Length: 509
Image 1 (cartoon, rainbow, N blue to C red):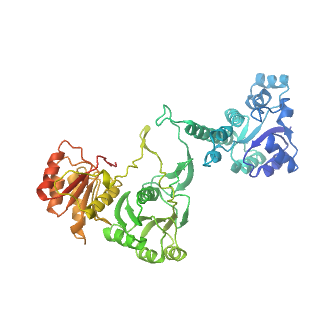
Image 2 (cartoon, helix red, strand yellow; image 1 turned 90 degrees about the horizontal axis):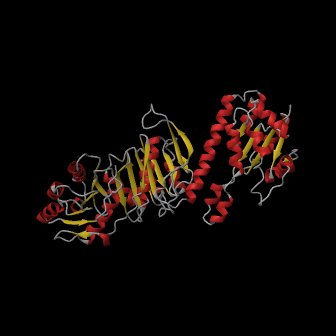
Image 3 (tube, helix red, strand yellow; image 1 turned 90 degrees about the vertical axis):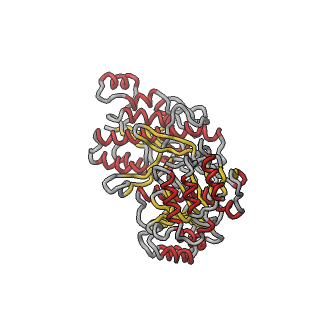
């Protein structure tokens, strides 16, 4: 007994071969528009939808499959005698397979020149309706939304393995697909910052070897319309990225994107352990490496300039997990790739002025969403609150320290010069302990006499300022805003320290 398949696709990958194999399995092919033409051009016998419905396409193709002879043929329950009688009485042939993929809405809105009117025309109506109908009635209808499933469907039909579990699997994929499609449309049309309902859609990029620990399964998903600042698409060399690699690499990339000068970031466990800026990327590497030669071992490195051979030679001398750069010279790539496991990633930083506006984090039973912290504190915005004025070099160092501290987990305190970090203190339950860690790590380093201290949040008490003063810190930057600001300012004045406040907190949990 002949069966009927309805094929209507925008992505025509492997379409002709799929249709021919269905014909070999005694399926009648029903189709529309461009799909029908592609099949006819390939010599496949096709019945037009208008022949089934007895009604021509109208409104420039907006209405062609929205008809009882299509949807009743899809939705009728095969095990319901009344449903089947109604089909027979109405002269409707059941549709046993629906293969539809939707208008290319995503591809359309990804083009910067797309107008609202052009985007609207790529909102599919009939396609989702047929897919949802077929997926709802998966017990009687095979539904195919992904060309990658064409051959598995053919194989299942040939081997009579198109059972309920197989059909349910395909139906679930359809609903995931249409949900993602609708999410893209709603987000494109939404202007509210925090709408009453929020539906985000992600696409699986890859399965991961494991999660934070080896006993935890994990996968990486990225937004269906990802940020232009992304590290994942261009892995040039090395073993697969792990869950922790991706988190660290993302943190390093977001941090290096803030700097204009040639900059090197060394990241460990989502905290910078070394940051260096200079006139060349090689010198910036030297500054970052000297910041903490111990912690950089096994680190994630992000740079904002092409890596040359001289820099690569220095990187090659130590064990690094990941290197991220806009590009590599051929010689530099060859040097770094001598180590088969090092991950070499290419990141486009030309869009660094267009980062994601919002960031999300999941919690048990929900999700938190906030505006990303893209506030850049500049020297003209600094307010000097002490009797001693900062020098020009100190101001540069204070700005550099502020760029660094906003990417350190709170409580965050960093000690820097104007070109490199000297000590980083983070993650402590009180600020004085973070200050002690940062200052103690900085103490043995050259250039300490030019060091400044930066804090991501205000000082609740003057103890951090006192500790800094006793270890020769000459300038401090902090947001201010504590009810005891005057105590910290008085302590700075007591020891002749210059202090500036920014009025902006950069707390990172």
